[in-house]
Length: 272
Image (cartoon, rainbow, N blue to C red; front, side, top):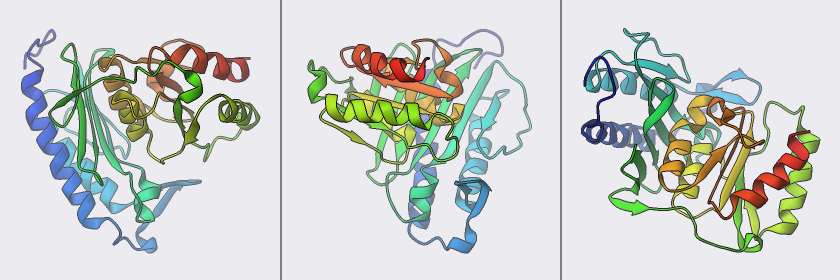
């Protein structure tokens, strides 16, 4: 990889990345359902971490440092890396869906994105329970394992299935959120809450969901999944239609057909 300027052959980084994702997933699967509650630590209210989160993150930082020398890291558990600055930055969520994991539930996922300056250029989300690896490279489309994927082409919003995440720490927008929830219950075929934003986004990318929205997340929760949705032909914005989704503070991801009515409903309550 060149030290300066963007390497057009990013696909050669993808293969070792995907191999690392699967190896991390095997470790998570080995410990799934075997965790003791005394092994769980609360970072803050309703926000948990386990030794598995930390072990996977350390493994990924070490492995990805070897794949792309001179890269920086933005990680959920703040694992230190030898390189703290770089044109390329890996954005890592080692275990998205920790609460599911603690309770022996799926989905849980490993989520890794690669950022070049301010733009994402690669992303992968590995859903461990179903052994499904979603990934994309800039300009080369999106894939589930080795099959190309696209967002839903469903035309009727009344038939759309929408995913969301329930507020678990930041409740100051609760009333507006519940108003959106009530409206979507009436206007769509249903709402789902899986417990992993990375998986929700991956499911939008492959057409299982027509849309997803949530607030109060972090960059590592949405980086890979949001990038994959865009490479699969979807639309990703913040609640008011801007580019602020990368922070994770608020995000809408949807198919081009589902996005306009979904954003309108959300903006009516959340952008006032």
